[in-house]
Image 1 (cartoon, rainbow, N blue to C red):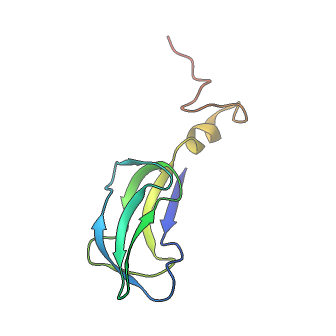
Image 2 (image 1 turned 120 degrees about the vertical axis):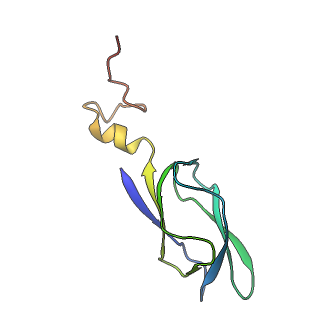
Length: 101
């Protein structure tokens, strides 16, 4: 399942994207740093809220962002497989009910 990830609460104002640490196709972990924003007062690394695979980037270097702005589209791990699994309550990952051979 894809989810749109947005800028979290970064206080008042906005910041400029000075570093992108991920790209389309990258697999990321929850709390992994994904980009750096610089404001008049400080630089801050923004962490990923969830694990998954980056499907589309919505920002580029030099963009000015504020809370709520779109960052990227994330294919959330486990949710897509579990949603399509007939045993979704017990599914343990890339569809455990899929038969092989």
